Amino acid sequence: MEAVSRKYSRKYTGWRLFWNTIIARAYPRIVGQQREVSWLVFDLIMPILGVVAYVFVYRALNAPEEYIGFVVMGGAMTAFWMNILWSMSSQLYWEKEQGNLALYIMAPNSMMAILLGMALGGMLATALRAIVVTLIGVWLFGVSFTVTNYVQLILVFMLAMVALYGMGMMMASAFLLFGREAWHMANLAQEPIFLASGFYFPIKSLPFWVAAGASIIPLTLGMDAMRQLIFPTGFQFGFLTVHLEISILAVLCVVFIVTAKVLLGHIEKIAIREGRITESRR
Image 1: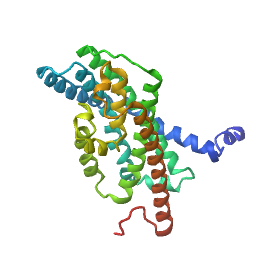
Image 2 (image 1 turned 180 degrees about the vertical axis):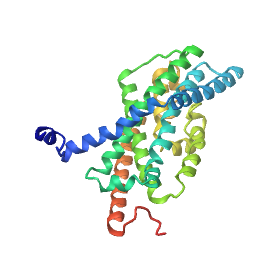
Image 3 (image 1 turned 45 degrees about the vertical axis):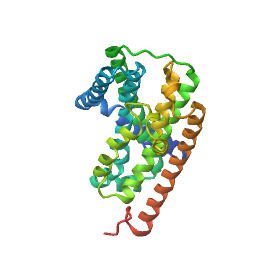
Image 4 (image 1 turned 90 degrees about the horizontal axis):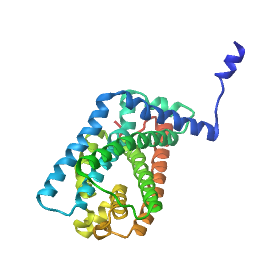
């Protein structure tokens, strides 16, 4: 009995506690979400319906065949943006409403580790859905990919995901700090981003300054670079060069993660000093 007690009374500290917190927070997003079949159906069917509609429109207009591939890719990437809005940005606000956030703050683990776990779990779970959507789109519409540089493609995807989920961590802190209506803010940021970020068309089609402003969303440059790398004539539709977009994505990774850390630190200071975790004093 004493040996069993010692086994389950181990206390992790430092980086070991940080890493275990990430794994523990990522677990329900990777495993738990797969148990809810209705969510899987919703996450797979809804993006495909949007893809089908755009494919029929482009074919009716006799658009270049590359546009069909652009739409399939955009439909797959919508899963990541939806995950950022509803499973990252609004999460801390919902945890506060349910009474769990106080437990997170009182626990000896780092809040940054909790956010990183949310990001890691969400990224892996959503990637599975995005792959399925892509495969279905390729099968339905006969889309073919011609990768010109695998190293750059992998690098672009990883940087885009790190920057995107860094943005999600930042937005989670910001929604909690400033927003009483996280639901409405998430709704507001959903459809406009589909348009501004060029999910279903080349971002180059927009006016330059509109496209430049939309580049603050990592998926904008990430999709633009990947389209240039996996379609033979993709470079003709590119907004910026792939090398420049890789550099910008790397900068966005640092900016969003550092900003998330600063906002979390501010929340913790408010909680310690004034016993609240939002800017509202009511």
